[in-house]
Length: 210
Image (cartoon, rainbow, N blue to C red; front, top):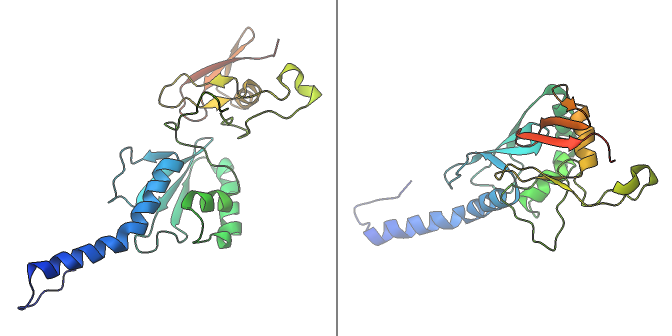
């Protein structure tokens, strides 16, 4: 809303516009942080004019966020999307932990704190050769050291989704256990066939470690 009078000049309009840009800097920085740190599935090509973002939380669950342009670091309006059974824990954590939201923390850190779990990174985030990727199911880099895991004890993620736009890493043990809970999973000999929990593209993993 520009203030204009008979004595106004073009430079007055420019100054007002520049002041407005300063007000929006925090909002733009927050949106940049969301786009870089979280898995934004909608919009696919976000712009600064889009304050609504749909974030993937894994397991076919999503959170639709509306960021306040005037108070971008405040607790956002949100709506959870997905199957009822999987959403119950997310909604419960949101209601229980929402007071822990702090304007002094980064947006994605606040969201992880309130939901009480590590949020999946965007598929475009590349892992350097000397770094290990976290498993997209258990969110750990290495499996625990446990005799029950046999040769997989303490192992890093050893399976990667072949969809180039996803490329999520998994422990084959975690992926196998997850596929066994899905009713649409098929088994042929010693191989389980199903869908990636993130992009729903086909995945296949051995049903045993042998």
